[in-house]
Image 1 (spheres, each protein chain N blue to C red):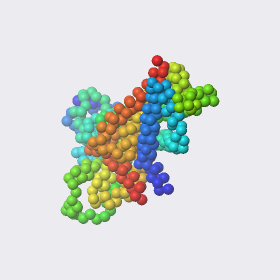
Image 2: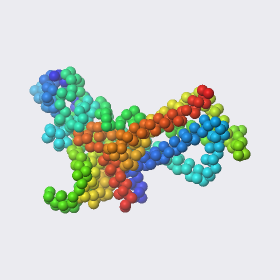
Image 3: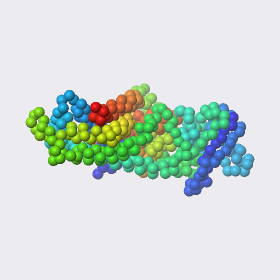
Image 4: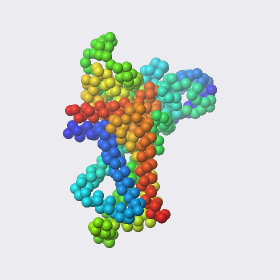
Length: 247
Length: 228
């Protein structure tokens, strides 16, 4: 199949970028979107041009490295997949697809489609952890919890920190990411002890990083490759209010 | 001081918007039901209702002050959220679209800032026309069956809504109010942490019903006065 691409090209963090048109004539419907970009880069290298820079690692949808705005949607039009798991069969022969980086002030562009998402790392560093020793794996079973609770915590733990929630949010809010981490830890007995400090520190860090406010659009949930629910955001708010009142 | 900084946090700002929003929704519903007394076969019903409200004395004034606070805070926080949104993404996308369900990013959600600003402007005009409009000093006086001489708000309302600008302008604004509530009611409850995966779709639908009911309830009286 023939695919026309309009790709965001930007030399560096401070240079201005623009959309550049390319055509890949030898695309296959079995390719992932990242493999399509690999083919494009082969073409560019052969003609002596700079390849398009983009992030990727596992290419099986679990690492959270890749993330692009494909045709105006974070990770592309297919639901619940990262862009590495988006296949070209989701598109038609002759389609023109716009590819842009995840845009937010807190995610500065490094080059082309690569953005710096270390703002997320700093939110985790603020208190996205359990600071007591919880022992090794078998010790986790020393405190029994219900299956429902375990499932709920696991749903939030599925967050791969890709940043699609921020990219898709019209306000550039990091609420779903932060809420997923807070809910994942706060639902478990080992994490509950520091729940109040955790939610305060992480919400404050979110603000420091310059993410926008949440307007409850739920666009984040719609693009999340792991389908994390905005119920987590409601939970984060409850936990925050509880923390403020108990202080 | 701790509470102040908590209220200024990303969660606090949402809680403020939600609480003030719910206060305003309660006011809007009460106001709408009050207006409907105009349609009562008892021609004194509307003026009696207005007189009873004023007669509440300090309770009435406390509610007025609380409502004014709700309006001001709701507007300030709403506008500040909009300003932060621009800062959070200074360079927008060349191509952007919603991924669809379960996203609630519809027309009502996207237009909150516009419908909100229009409603704020409307509120000022509305207060000038009615609350601070002509009163007993200007001859708008009526004697209730109970004997009290009170301001004839019914006459003021009847006169105003015979003007096409009022008769058709008000209903349009009320439709915008319904739109604002369509996203706002659900959003307020989510902001206060009351929503869950199971409740959200139901409450979101009920918010639409409430938005329509309030809009229809309000636009009924102006159109009735104009056409009948």
